[in-house]
Image (tube, rainbow, N blue to C red; front, side, top):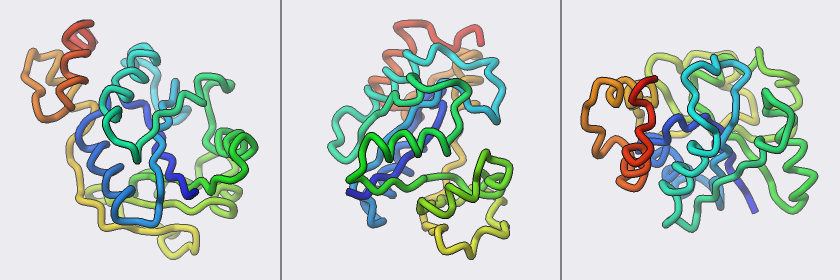
Length: 192
């Protein structure tokens, strides 16, 4: 089985994430998309991250009705901050019959050479890249492991949603209804 790993803080998950995952599931040769909720991305500031279990629950709520999606908390059990190369090694050992690929934005591809053991990732895993505004110039574009997709560009971001919530704005249509209800029920992001 070919599994695309979509790593993220999902702080919160939003429709942009779901559109990207849906594209990868239906317009590439990937069989399943696993949302890997990261407790702490080593390249991002931990400030402003809400509880990882709330982020995991929102991701589950957003993807529950879709058989091609799966939500993984694998990084909750690994040393933090979690490094992608370590998570991949752990997953490959645990699921030897799966072929794991990465799903990332072109902005992340641009910074891939700063990742821990990035050469190992490129050697052993395909990378499916979705375009991000203004960042599709990178010396890894021609690498045989890199597959540039025509995923619709999403300019929606979790930062935008958090700012909107803090300002008391309506986020309907930016996140799935179940996620919106969960955020409101716990008053998440109101003071972040």
